[in-house]
Length: 154
Length: 154
DNA sequence: GAAAGTGGGTTCCAAAAGAGAACCTGTCAA
DNA sequence: TTGACAGGTTCTCTTTTGGAACCCACTTTC
Image (tube, rainbow over all chains, first blue to last red; front, side, top):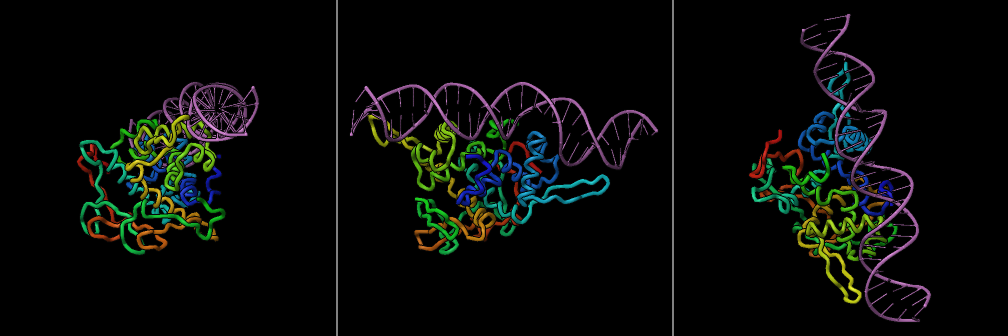
C-alpha cells in the first residue's frame, strides 16, 4: 500500500496518520506546541533538512492543521500557527510525551514537566471514559462498527 | 539530524517517536490493538511490503513493545503480542483515533465505535488532570524543566 | 550606493528507505 | 513428489532524505 492511500482507509487512526504520521510531522507539531512559529525556529530547533521542513509545513497548512499568518509586510514574512484543528492534536502530544516519560526517561528523570495552570500542579493526563468517568484501559474497551464502517473488521 | 539520533533528545515526545514515530510502526500497533498477532495477518490487513513489516516487528520486539510467543512447535511458529510497555501506548492510539473521528470522518460518520465494557457505553476518552480532575487543554498547560532536563527550552 | 544580513525558501546530488515481486526454509498432508 | 502454509530474505527499481549550495526581496550598515 502507498502511504497516500491511507486517508481512504476505513479507520480513524489510519486517516489521522495520513496527516501527521510522518517521521518529521509530529516533531514539527511538538515544536508548535512548545511555541515555535517561524521557519528558522523549526529548522534550528529540529535540525531538519530545509526542503523537508518546507514540505511538511506546506502539507500541514494544506491540511488546515497550521495556518500562515503575516507578522510583517515589506518584506512580507509569515509565521505558522496551530489552527483549532491543530490544537486538537494536543492530547496526542501529551500521551506520546507521557509514554516517553514512563518508558524512555533515564535515571535522571523526565526532561519536561507539564504544569496545569488551572490548578497550579505538575500534572499527568489520564484518559477517562466520557460516560462513566473511569479511566480507559485497552482491556476494558472493545470496538464495534460505527455508522461510517464500510466493512466490519474482526 | 538523523532519525536515529532522536532518542538522544531531551524530550519525551522525541524519544517516543524514535520508537513508534515511523510511517508504518503506528499502523502495525493499531493492528495489534485490534487483535492482529501473526505476520500474515499484519501483511494482509495492512498491505505493507513484507521486508518492511519484518523490520518493524523486529524493531518493536527489540524495543520491548512487542514480544514473540511460540504458538506451535514443528514447524515452530511465533506470534507477536503487545507487552505491558506496548499496551501503555493505548492512550496514544485512542487520541489518534479520536482526532480522526472528529476531523477526518466524512458525512457517513465514524468508522469504529469504542465500547467501554465497564459501563457498556460507546465512549470517547478525555484527558483529565491527575491533580484536579479537570480536562487538560493546551492553553491551560505550560511546561517547566524537569529533573532530566539537560538544557532548558524557551 | 555597495556589501552584508535576514527570513523563507528552492535546487542539486548522493545515500537511505520503500514498493513489489520472487525466492527460501521447515514441516505436514494429499 | 507435489503442494500448501507461515514467516521470512533477497532482488531491482522508485521515492524520500540529508546536507549543502543557491536564490530573492527587502533592510541595515559601512
